[in-house]
Image 1 (tube, protein in one colour):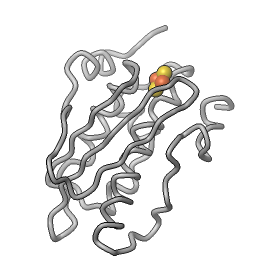
Image 2 (cartoon, protein in one colour; image 1 turned 180 degrees about the vertical axis):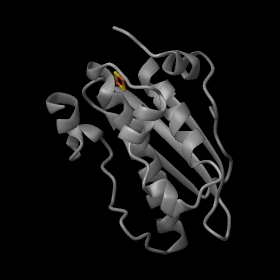
Image 3 (cartoon, rainbow, N blue to C red; image 1 turned 90 degrees about the horizontal axis):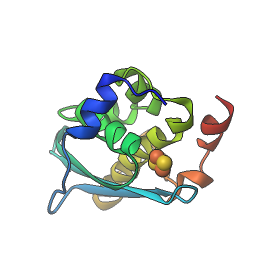
Length: 149
Ligand code: FES
């Protein structure tokens, strides 16, 4: 299995690892297939800008690398921008992932969405285009990515 230099870099030196106390939104998702879990914390200001983002994972190296990159991509962005983040964007930013590890990148995307959902829920607002996330990506519409792509 071949990992890009960027994947190795984000795996060995992950950005934004940790947690945020009193976060504006926290999202946790798992993948029952591999048993990995991802949690994302968002600190969002009154204008909807993501001031800070942190993640914690009980997951594989690819999950660490993709989460690290995902947090880098949404930090400082508006929540509407963060909503557009997909696992493909993250994988591209990492110069790709081996096909068997593609599903790992979905964990990061879904955890960001779950954290945004939690934020909207707490604030009593609706974020256009955001659906209630699944607790487990195995149950979600993304599962086919891992197998068919
Ligand atoms: Fe489970 Fe990578 S093997 S997230």
